[in-house]
Length: 240
Image (cartoon, rainbow, N blue to C red; front, top):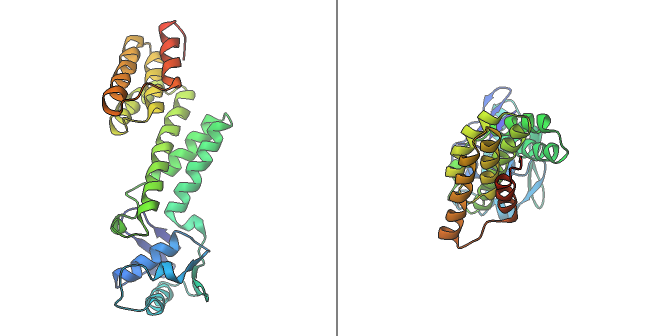
């Protein structure tokens, strides 16, 4: 089986795509895929914003679409709700989440090569999360959590590659990232560190000056201890 929640919802079984005919069916399947193997309560599934058909009718249509795609028996009814019996590894959001956390764990354990591999695999899955359900109540928190994890995975990958000595790649990548995510101080630290390691100390200090002004003018904040320590190290001919 293959299920995608990044971008438009897509599902494919051994016999072909899972063809769903209504928005209610797609929304309920998406909610079930966010908790693979778990019973999702009826009251949450019924809150999909479509009352044209009952939840049981909608579930029956999903079950039939799965059968026609060569995947019978995956949708299991319970008194409390429904469960979708799929391997989490068959769901792109689950793969992304698992590998992003695995990359972070490897980074914390001092293994940047393993971290970089896991994070590259995680980020290869990425697209706009639950794109067609952005206005649905069930999707808002999930989208926000995934976007935050994505930002952290991007940051962790840059840190891992800097630890591996990919200085030129880091300088180029981080120059873009600090523009896209300007309030993440760790990205600025990594950018200044990469510039310093590339022999571009004046530019590193200019970057630290930029972020200091940004934090002050837009947020009314002083730089955090990481930025301050880095600036002290660079000015004192340290080697971050």
